[in-house]
Length: 417
Image (cartoon, rainbow, N blue to C red):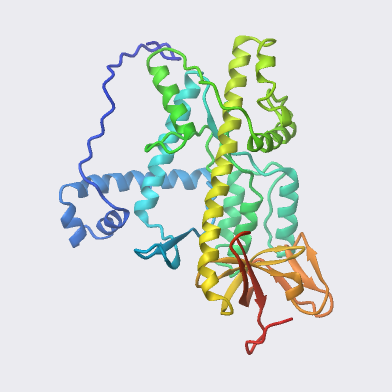
């Protein structure tokens, strides 16, 4: 077939088969890379040179990431460890080594290649789009940085490297988790869209979800588009399910996004997806096909949010079940969020989050300061902000609502009332 640049290419298609030379774990690979003369490397034998070559590629990609100014923030993911009977034994933070980061960079590179291939051939498809922060979030972040006394800020139209500069400059501060949390909260959520607006967080001009194993429906759509391009024929989307509540909520978000970008949406708001059939009769074929892909992006984005919420709900239930066995016990923790109704605290030992209601903070009036993201007592001046260390007691666990309540503890172990 003839490419967009006029070059002629010939392909021979074979059934998709993967030949694996070894089945390795992240732990094995990390150990072999850290000591090529150790027992782990000896057990891998002739695969070690391959891993070393791949590690060199990883280092080159990592340098490119740093040059682009990718936003790297410190976040903690947890894993729940259970026994043979399914009973939760402990909750631990996930540790990432060079093997994890190596695979991640390789996946990112493959995703970029797929996105650039689709864009070059001007075929409709789904990109993974991540917008920069909204003006409102930019101003809130500026106020927060000023309050902390940091000589750092972001421009009206911030670039990824500005966020990375703040992240790097505050990495050694004792409150760096607090600052990184605010940077993360100022970001927008990534979506699927046929309009390539780039990926802010990863600092890519074109990005999509493509990598194997295929875990998402958007991955499958991208594979189908690439296959169609290679076969020199267009790919037409199948009929999508009728929109539901998740689509309506996502449609409202996208409508607000399009309005902020000064773009007239083809599908937006409460009518996203619903008026698609009627509008197709009035639009050209190309325009109708773009609408189909916008609806597909809306569908995939909405279902991604729903899946994330389901995953968080299950994890919250498991943590509640675990904490029910620790009622009345006391733990140290840090404030992970401040609101007008109380503070959320994450326990050090268990990585479990719960609420200390404002009525449990003491016998005075507390005022929420949005700029500082803190609660401040009017009489004593005591402050609770993100990163503040506290000691709490587990006072209540509700499995049905997936909520854990804590009570503040004074020195000496006396609970505040």
